[in-house]
Image (cartoon, rainbow, N blue to C red; front, side):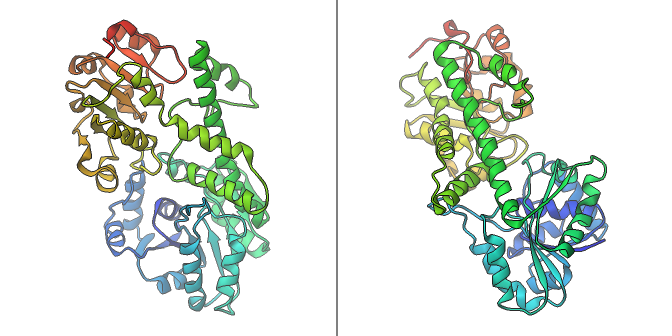
Length: 445
């Protein structure tokens, strides 16, 4: 059992905290937000993630996880302190390290014995050195700084932490490496996943490289899908044809309306900025960003194939979160799509199983209408845009959908439905990189 302190109870920090507690560690989570600390102390998650509530409440009852706003208490508690703080992008795309470095200035005076400081946040090359220098300026107590990037998929974060496909530890200290390896051994002992040790700089860059590569795969298959639209091919066949090659694989070959979330957009921008700082023009990354930005307007482009003028049209939206099984709307493509619809004076009615409160509070307020369920927003709708692939949308009663709509126009931004299924259901159906169906089912206007 290790005494662990997590500073920051956002997405990464909270997931890490409950998972470390689940395997028997004594975890204290620190956050400056008193209301968040109070909610978490009562077992109320502040984000939506599958299994999070269950693990949080179980480990609170067991006394293995606590929450506080007292940083001094946190530093005194943890022999390993994880920094899970926000690193939002600045206007130039660089990662804002102000939160990380501010906490680093505060940790030093509270250190009493050897401690490992772990950068769990996604941070640019050189951050560990900055953290070490900042802490060393205020203490003579020995400590090490470790780079330990997270590789969590929202919606599957608990699963990914409890059974990772790899753990990356960047350190120049044998002592820190032994402790960190012991800390992660319970998570890899059953599945045999490797604990990869490397220098700190390589570990810092590994996270950016991983996310940039995933973003590249997504933008590439979207480019192929757009070409399919022009030559009459079907991207479903192509992704199977190329994904069968083990050098390529099927993961992230998912055509749609672009990537979003808290990681890929931010990390791609940061990698481009890091490259520019070192005099290198990362041309592929620039292209990936451009493709992703343009792809978000694909639903509007497909909608205009039916309605040249969207003014006054009722457009139903299924899905607001950037992906299913999360309430995260950061960089969600749906937000860009809705903004474009509002700019063209369409009437927008939206439903999402988890993200509506976030959209209402942080983005559109009462500019759009929200439904209590996915069918409610369909009444007399001129079109339905499916923007997030929640399972309940996949399971929709298509006859019920068609009957409630004024016109059976369905724009599928995630290729959820099969073409044959939609043709039999009587829709005019457009998707990404696949042939349109049911053209005769709607009057173009």
